[in-house]
Length: 387
Ligand SMILES: Cc1cc2nc3c(=O)[nH]c(=O)nc-3n(C[C@H](O)[C@H](O)[C@H](O)COP(=O)(O)OP(=O)(O)OC[C@H]3O[C@@H](n4cnc5c(N)ncnc54)[C@H](O)[C@@H]3O)c2cc1C
Image 1: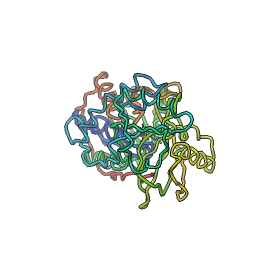
Image 2 (image 1 turned 45 degrees about the horizontal axis):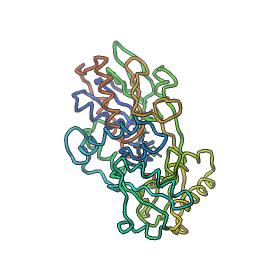
Image 3 (image 1 turned 135 degrees about the horizontal axis):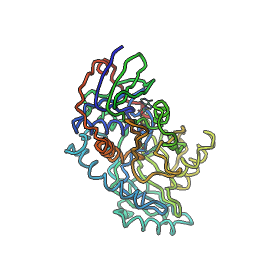
Image 4 (image 1 turned 45 degrees about the vertical axis):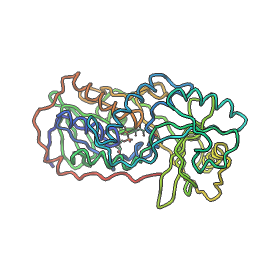
């Protein structure tokens, strides 16, 4: 049992917490992070890893602000992936694809879908001529059209590993069981009896923020959940990273990214079926995924593919059940800042918002540090990949 004191304590080690911790350390704060299980063990490890740059958000029905926010962070991600300044060094992150495809189905609605795609084309998306199509599209029918965008796809597990390596051992395993105030700061009680005092507590625990806000006696109703029923297709036939387009809806008919589990190629399926399939049983969701694949890729033989599904909530700042246009960082109560990046790609904006909020309240650090108790905690591992 012991006590520690630091400027800022971050709770939750997904992409948001790790990026925020890096930013705090860069800004000179004496900051630490507590993770209750494994880093990324929530949405980050389950994310499709797409660094949206705006193409998807220019589909009909999406707010202009949303595409602006994702466009603004591209430079930061590029700097990080290039190992440059102003971002964590992400040069060792595994890039699964340097481009994302958008394709139309070639069915009855294909001409309309193509019109939707041409609208998207104004946002830096380029048509791919048939001669240059990837191998898996060789059998596509005459009505199919293919576009590409420079939006990258990252391996989320490798992103978490690299972010962890960039925070100098400042992420530790700890379970918060009590939160209280002392002087102008916050006191955190950990399972096992340790206590950590800090000027500010930054909650980046994804869906876990709700319980932590409750523990702190903070404002209720700050968080919303939007569930997804994701599908993993094991034994997929070729690499594919992209969205199958449909018209008149604000989301793709299917979003596919490609990974690997136990040496087998996987397709990770999100988009429309994941949102619509929340109430479905596993069997029904697999049936819906098969049907979506048959609609989007009718020329592909998937007879040898096996399917798994799981449910996961997107945890976001409350926005009337709709996706917020940006990252959200709000004071849940004095000294306790609750943060949701909204998207993995917006983690840098979440980190910037945290620094802004702290400075607005005059929290500048330098209050003296005692870190034996924090140093004695174990360093967390990275969550197991799910696709
Ligand atoms: C299926 C799916 C696909 C997605 N695809 C994309 C995509 O392609 N591109 C994109 O930009 N965004 C995507 N997103 C959104 C993106 O994944 C999230 O916005 C982002 O990962 C949230 O990160 P986070 O760090 O806030 O939360 P999380 O990743 O959920 O991390 C929270 C962390 O806090 C820990 N924790 C929880 N409770 C506690 C506690 N009490 N104490 C200590 N630690 C705690 C958890 O173990 C976890 O490590 C996707 C989301 C989902 C669900």
